Amino acid sequence: MTLNDIARACGVSRATVSLVLRGSPLVHTDTRALVEAEMLRQGYVYNRAAANLRQRVSSAVALVINDLSNPFFAEFAAGVDEALGAKGFVTLLGSSNESPARQRQVLGSLMEHHPAGIILSPAESSSVSDVEFSIGRQTPLLVFNRALTGPASAGFEYDFLGLDNRAGARAATGRLLALGHRRIAFFGGHASSSSCRERRLGYQDALRDAGIEPQASWLIETAPTRLEANARADALLVLDPAPTAAVCYNDAVALGLMLGLVRLGRRPGTDFAITGFDDIPEAAVGIPPLTTVSAAPRERGRQAAELLLQRAATPSLPGRCVIAPVHLTERESTPAVAG
Image (cartoon, rainbow, N blue to C red):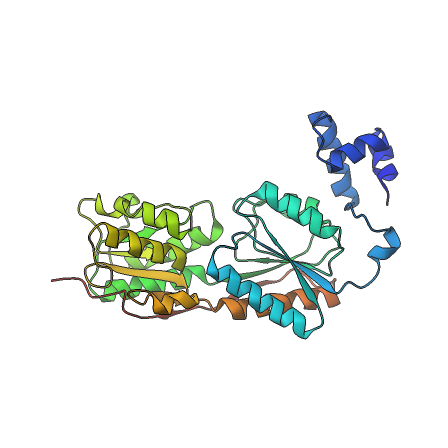
């Protein structure tokens, strides 16, 4: 398939198609939409290599991460690389920094290397159609951690590896309830993220099981980072009455919140209880050590690589959805309620 094929089907010049591929502002919006729709219909993916080179077996797998600053994804990437290396593959690494536009650019660039497959931890609000447009239908794809939005078109199969987010957050909230806490916040993450929605549901399940109706003011959104969690710590203390505990979206948020509470004169692990999610290595050596939901990120990376290589070996496999179990690891950040 060539640019000429796309141009002929759209009734435009080859040069126009080329401008669309380069993202040129010179192309009218309607023309761009027409050309992109035709490329998607025909499964065309831009590749600098000749067409016959695409048929060769590649020894590279692309890994695109949404947030490389999060230690969870560093551990996940290490697990992917370990498993791929053991099978003779190399890892091509890219980062979207939570931007769907950047993700599309990164995927497009990586596709020029014709990888044997792609492991994608998607940026927030990533759509199936956008990913399909970026990589086509022929490249094996495994999506990790977050669901893509929108329906998949016929013929676009991919695998999904997720965490049991709902059960994990339910276990963390249940433990805080058992310790006597009744005013428990859910802190961090964006409600638009599927993993955040699932963890919020688990948190709400546990509260309702205990006869407590969750309050909207107890759901505090922040970017899932340590810096923003630190900056937003005061959002907990201005509530009246203030919560005595918080279930955090992830460990980065939990560690940032602990620093923020100390800055505001509180003592996490003594007069405020905090749980995380992920069990990154730093969680065990925090001050205090962090109670968290263990997701074994390095093991998940190895699992993701294995699933992708299975699909690469058997492209006709139907799409699979694998949910990895998690478990609560209790440490010193969750004291019983005071008094």
